[in-house]
Each structure stands twice: as structure tokens, then as C-alpha cells.
Amino acid sequence: MLPGPTTHTAAAPLHRQLGLAFGRALALLLSVLLSLGVSACSGIGQPPQKVLLSALALQIDLTQRAIATALDLSADGEPVVSRVRVESQESLPIGGGRGLHLSGRFDWRLPGDPIRVDSAFDLYLQRGERGQSWRLARPVGSADGTSQDWLIDPLPLPGERA
Image (cartoon, rainbow, N blue to C red; front, side, top):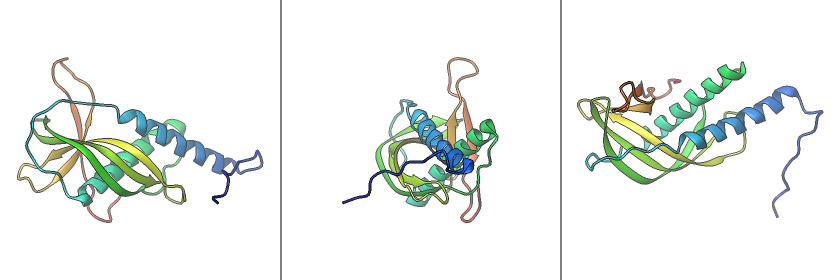
């Protein structure tokens, strides 16, 4: 039998309560971010698993930093991403280049947090010009009202923090 859920009392340290609230806010924000969709045509193959893990970790890290800045908290450590399951994939143009929209599920947890979360994801990746690299692409609306604008972030090298 599994133990029951733990409850946090008012005696719990404030930093622990803020950390739990931060983790829940991050999970909620990621769920909301994952509702974007763009139609496309067929084409390029799926990136390697290491690219998906790196892109998801970068997306979580960027979201974590934005929330931490808004709440005037520190965003320490890199998220731990594992078990990526791609459920759909479509090709689309991203910023004048080739790209992919991938959706599915993945497991992740914040550094120092024993709780692993299973979350849905929508991930946009831009293919490098020579087809040898990938970048995280984030849709940001449209300046002219007719085309999608993107924020493009390079994926960090192994061992490098986003």
C-alpha cells in the first residue's frame, strides 16, 4: 500500500512552501503553454532523443526563470527530463527555415524535488541550415497579423546550462 499524501503545516519553512507553490505554478504554466497548434505539411524526420530531452529541459528552464523573475524568487538548478513519448509530429516553416511541431508526454522533476511529474508537451524545433542541428522555437504572435513570429533559442551543449 502506498503512503497517503503528505500535508504541509504552517510550521513548514516559508522557503519550502514557496518552492512547492513555485513547482505547482510551473506545472500549471507548462500545461497552459502546451495548448498551441499550427498546421503544416509533411517532411523531415524526428530529432534524436537527446535533442528532445535538451529542448524540453530548455523550455522548462526558460519558463521557470520567467516565473521566478515575476515572483522575485531564484530559479536554481536544471530540471531533470526523462521518458519522452512523441504522439504526433508535423513539419512546418519556422522563421524562414524548416521546423517540426511535436506533441506528446514526458516525465520531469525540479532539482531536489523527489516528485516526478508526467506532463503533456507541444514542442517546436527549427532545423539547422545544414540539417545537423536543432533550435527551440517559441511562437510569440504575429507582427503583421498574417504570419507567425518566433523566438529561436539554441539548444545548450551537453553539460551547459540554458
